[in-house]
Length: 115
Length: 113
Image (tube, rainbow over all chains, first blue to last red; front, top):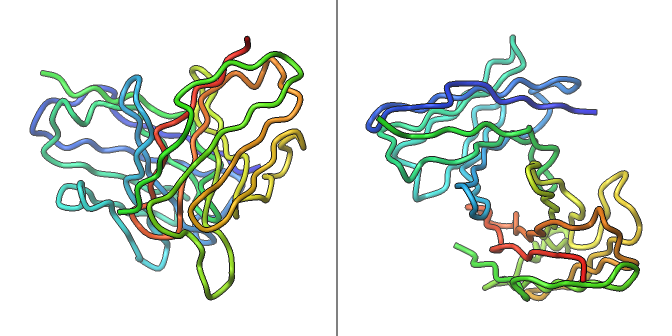
């Protein structure tokens, strides 16, 4: 059963860059598309984007100018960076396998943007 | 972007009864090249990450009980939970994965009456 685990700082200052890593177990990162999603506290789900080992990426337009995804096949990990964060970027961030639909998901990591 | 709407916002159903949740997309999520509906359903229990229940509008994910069923086509879809159990208390989301950005409905909160 594929397992995913997010890691990274839980607190980021405004205007700085949020950086998260997802470690994948029991599946090769080269075999699928991989997604990042987020959920602000008490609100619904937002798809941030996906990445494929070929280098193909797709980002949601509202975040495209601030988002970068990458992957490291040697560590079976993929990563998310969101630059110039504000309080509106406070959310639980999830990584997940893509296609068809989205799943399984990691447990999620709460990232708070605050000084 | 494809806008997803859900109804109702919340519902309460008695144990053992049927719960029905509707999802509507602002445009078709049918991919004509393979005749598949790019629509998925997720369950999110309190304090847990979402769990995929259904994909291709009606295919149950492995391990999902058969009391969960999905139906619909084009722009109108339904998730039905037959024989509601206490562990089904959750928020349910639909998602289209036909066109990026992939978009979710706002969620339907299901409680026990």
